[in-house]
Image 1 (cartoon, rainbow, N blue to C red):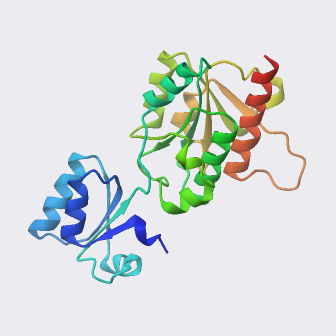
Image 2: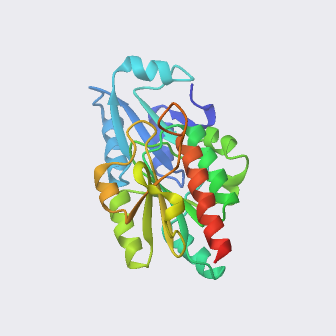
Image 3: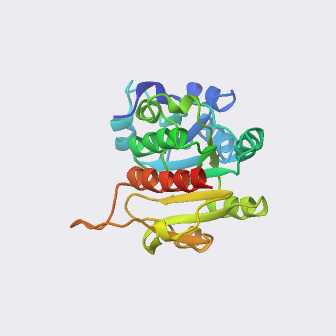
Amino acid sequence: MRDAESVIEGKNAVLEALRSDTTVEKLYVQKQAGDGPIQTIIREAKKQKIYIDFVPKERLDQMSETKKHQGVIAIIAAYAYATVEDMLQAARDKNEPPFLILLDGIEDPHNLGAIIRTANLAGAHGVVIPAHRACGLTSTVARASAGAINYTPVAKVTNISKTMEKLKDEGLWFVASDMDGTFMYDMDLKGPIGLVIGNEGDGISPLVKKNCDLIAAIPMTGDIDSLNASVACGVLSYEIVRQRRMG
């Protein structure tokens, strides 16, 4: 069940949200729902580059809180997004080398919330998430962040790989978390850095991984082969913190 405050239902309400300052994360539209208002909603969403998922009526019925969805449900952000430039400016203001955390398709809101919390405590200047096929800033994320969402900028970008390429022009280099990499203790993780964390199931996508400069492995001696995404983020973030403090 989604948080009630993160859902807008019905044609008029959704269209009003699209035309206001409300940040719509995603749109669910009933298949074969082709009347005028629905088409207007679809056009407006495409103009704003909002992801649209065409689903059977039964899916909308399951998602609906009011049972009056009229063929369309919008998922809205519980908090406003920042920009990547905001994060770089925050680093400049603190006279610190940028430290960003980039997430390649994190889908679990509890993981995203925990990562935002870690980012805040580890002194990261922000978290970057993709616009599609990933969790956005829902109220569940806000709760899981334990308040950190109020202090940690989160930017939503269309393409993580292209964002990395632009950040490289700003002097950042990127380290990805992956079990096949070099032990993190054997790496120099100082300077302007972006930490890349992959999807809970599939890990980091090949294109994003290709854009990384280093692949860092976390030493593990247990019987399973991977850590939860938010835990891996925490471990690597604090290795970055340790190395920065040591100079």
